[in-house]
Length: 211
Image (tube, one colour):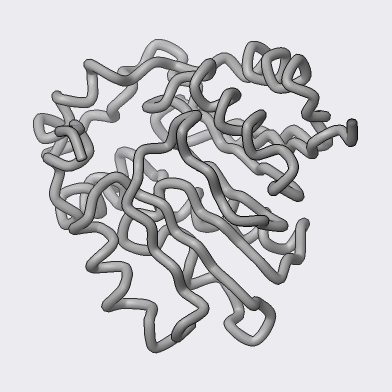
């Protein structure tokens, strides 16, 4: 696979940055993921940008037939495998890939995409969704609105994320909703979650519209 900025950031640094009190994202994202799972009980779950296991600790292994994690960083997936194989066994499938229109997923009742679209781009993400519409039950997304704060929050680890500037962009939830609607996905829920540093996380749930 071609070089990618996310492949240059260690899992240790990523998780330390996300858990920093100034960022406040790790706990908040965990709460949001728990809500996503509760609102859409599913036997098959896919997590785009699974990293070292984003959200896998919240999934009851007795309630799922398959959990798929997608990430561009093979080191993240290796750590995820070590952490969660005992929990899910063969039902855990980890796929090294870019999240773009070329990605074809297996049929999945709930696909979670939290803080991924900023690094994929709305156009490419919507193209992914459209090409997989027949294989997605619900697509639940979380994006970050910065409100004058930098895309990468200031912590002692911020310098490690400098390479992401080449691929990162802020996502306007209204623009995402319009693009998804044009791709025949209905917006079924919207929620906002403020962060300690003034940023806001927006959750938007979409369902494909039957042809």
